[in-house]
Image (cartoon, rainbow, N blue to C red; front, side):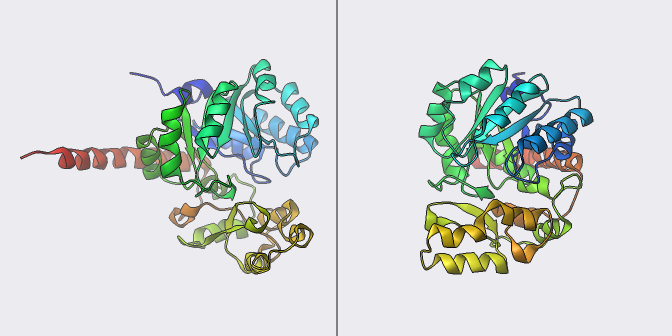
Length: 326
């Protein structure tokens, strides 16, 4: 039987990756996902280099399984201090995921450290460029995903099969996947693994405030919106009274200086970690309405695997009926 390429590259049991999530993607959660057979990641975003290093050390102390890190490479974030942290812990880090910018200048550096490199992409062109530059895996992030996304706004259903046709390296699907049914659908489109963010926020190990987790459980299908379009951005968040202030302001095409106090990362931390929902904004993907309980990360993965089995059986039956001839 052919081995799953994503699982083989990352040296994990299941090709289920924890997305890199600002503030809430800490060492404890990364370790919990890895211990359950997935691939946990410590997020650099929202952290100082010192805190980033501490979270890597926490992950290392709580799991002997492979885990990775996520670093945004936007012009607002790139800092050699984070790279030095990764270099110092390269023997424990299996892979790094890069997003929010052009990864091509950085891929050779991380490959030389002996790390596997995953690149988040929102178009076929970016996937092809990542492969040419030496990436091991491309993560196709659809418009459904929570957080800051590609301005191309391609949905996962459109993006994955087109990227799969264009590259030879493994494709991972991300954006709106919270159940085993989503995993099966992603693999039917050509993905060899999935990345999940929002579902892992609603776990016991995640440091997100209980108010945040409760908002995820209460959310329905149309309870996410996009902010930051007035400045050329795409940021999917939960729709709250605070976010309504932002969307109303954006109708008037505000200057960046007017909008920034409402959308900066501090406002995310205030809501996500401190629980002040009325003073900040919260990331969430479009499938948030499918999240109905707070579980451990291990229970989430086991539930997804069970749903994959059940969905696979139903899908086989449906395909047999579809292809049946008189």
